[in-house]
Amino acid sequence: MNPMDRKELQAKILDLKRARNALILVHNYQVMPVQEVGDFIGDSLELARKATEISKPLIVFCGVRFMAETAKILNPEAKVLIPRPDAGCPMADMITRDDVIELKARYPDAVVCSYVNTNADVKAETDVCCTSANAVEIVRNLDAKRVIFTPDRNLASFVSKQVNTEIIPYDGYCYVHTRFRPEDIELSREAHPDAIVLVHPECDPEVADQADEILSTSGMLRYARSSPAGEFIIATEEGLIERMRKEMPEKRFFSAGIAHFCFNMKKIRLEDVYRSLVEEIYEIKIDPEIMDNARNSLQRMISLTA
Ligand code: 13P
Ligand code: SF4
Image (tube, rainbow, N blue to C red):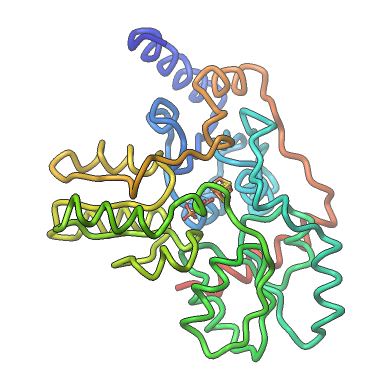
């Protein structure tokens, strides 16, 4: 799409958004033209919180399905649209509701903490949700002896190193973050010796061990904004790095090794956002009982987060 077409389409989206009294929520990994039409861009925790504050009747959620579902669960009065119904999260699909039921039967004294990167029916079987931004805080605040932590084994490992709780991890992972290798960090440090290394907790422990800071996507953004450093090596999806370069042109951001992309996040294009608003598609629909149970685990997360 040439820049003129892009600007025209963005203007149409913004007009239509006003006419429909809609709000566009965007995750940090979305392509830049979509980030540019967002009313709010953030990480999973910020977007979940934002969803609870919105009084608009229509939300267009530009992110993967579990994020749009979370917005719907926390704001059931709103109509929530996802511009591409096939934008799923492979990690979320690695665990089913039956898997959680089985784990609860095996460890009846354990509390179930699920990453928000799960489908609604898994959240409905979960005691409390967490995100990459608050996982340690949630597990600490639970004050439990044992926690079943699903589905990300790497986030589970990151948490277990910082709490006195026994963590029983599920074996899920993110195919995007597990592509970063320890040697990517070593080579990037050699090339940029003054840079600070920021790693997402979905990366493998051998990569996380080499980080200066392990942070959620928006945590990385805030860290870079407030740091006096001028160079950063980033181990997360490329969309966040694009946002950092745009918002902090005076600083330099390098992917740790080659850039990695989440193909589901990248499915949503401006054309899809426009079509979503014109036709009011694709609406997130969740069984009411699942929605009520899933809301309990999400609200518990919000109440346990500072
Ligand atoms: P954040 O909540 O840190 O943005 O992470 C979401 C995600 O899906 C990372 O892969
Ligand atoms: Fe899921 Fe990984 Fe994509 Fe995040 S980056 S949405 S965890 S596949």
